[in-house]
Amino acid sequence: MVIKNTNKICIIIPAYNEAKVIKDVILSLKKVFRRSSIKYTIVVINDGSTDNTSSVAKSTGAIVINHLLNMGPGRATATGLYYAKKYGYSTAATIDGDGQHSPRDLIKGIKILQKEKIDLLIGNRLKKANDMSLNKRFGNLILSYFTYLVFGVKITDSQSGLRIYSKKAIDNLKWHSSGYEFCSEMLWRAKQENLMISDYPIKAIYTSYSKQKGQNNWNAINIIKSIIKHRLVEIFG
Image 1 (cartoon, one colour):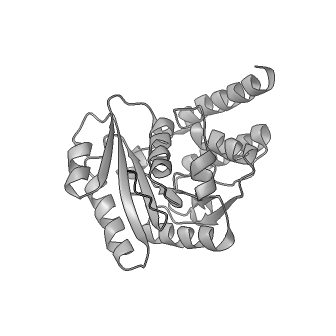
Image 2: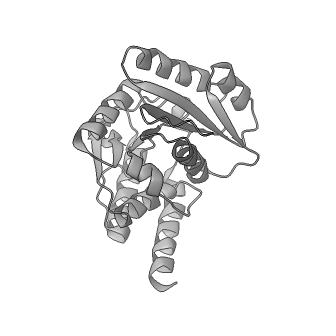
Image 3: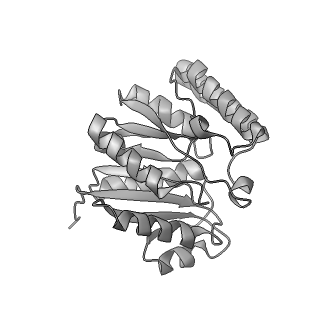
């Protein structure tokens, strides 16, 4: 029998080779959430890591789901949301596994989503982007522009990994992309499902480690190509 978790938050952490920091990420979440009244479950999607991400995450008490192969952040996120749907969570959230996101920002976003009846809430790093490199900031703005141009969804930081999902979003969001382009495609699919989309300011935590992770501007070109391809297939396919 499947136990429903309608009063809990499912915190999903897609992770690929994050053994160096994943324990600190999880323990930081637990420390901050213990001080709140929010009940939660932490689920790590180990996306075919070649290091010991899985065993380190398990040592903290987190639930770990392992992909045998590296399938990409889009597929890892989909696996996490499938888990949240299967076990009846009313709210889910995704954060990056590199320690970039503040648990306090996550709590703030959960309260905003539940209070304002939003379905998909994006953490906007660009409103507090003092620590973000100019190259990364420029790349994010370009990708957000293309997301608006191609899909008609206007979100300033379309590539942010901190996202919070309502029950409606958990049950209905589906996308095809497996790479980082899923960030933009998710917004498009949310629009197609008539989900309420919004954003709120967060402060990203940039360390020498986290700066090496995620997307770069060369990858942004490939993402733009993929975004255009998906849109053309949708129109003409």
